[in-house]
Amino acid sequence: MQTVLDAVPGTLVERMGIEFVEVTAERLVATMPVAGNTQPYGLLHGGASVVLAETLGSFGAMLSAGEGRVAVGVDINATHHRSARDGLVTAVATRVSAGRTLASYEVVVSDAQGRRVCTSRITCLLRDAVPGA
Image (cartoon, rainbow, N blue to C red; front, side, top):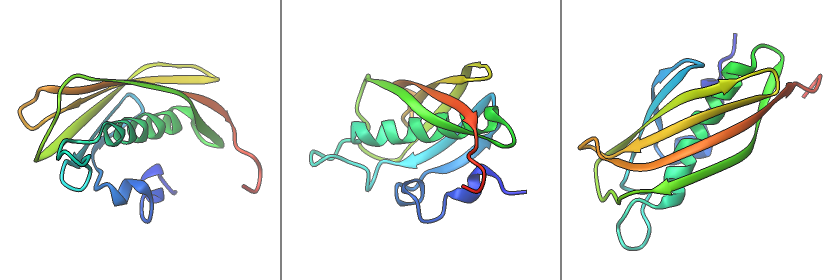
């Protein structure tokens, strides 16, 4: 049986160095290096934090959707609290709700010292997969 993580090679997830530590429908944890994901000033790019958050929330929503269903992101927001300059950031996505048609996750991105860098919320539409797609 193929898992959501089989879709990682050759994607933005691989390019950004995102590595999964824990994956369940209720909670996902992943790390990402700051190096290579910075803005010109040497700080972690806010967009990189959002990519990390959307990756975890989308994968969680796919797991919540179940067999024969897909998840499609419909909303994401992010509040950036502080910068990160080096090391790894760690994201923890916690399922807020999941029903037949929507799944929402809160994602907290923290630096190597455990300080909150970003808080994000993502909502995905859950729908039946298109046959043959």
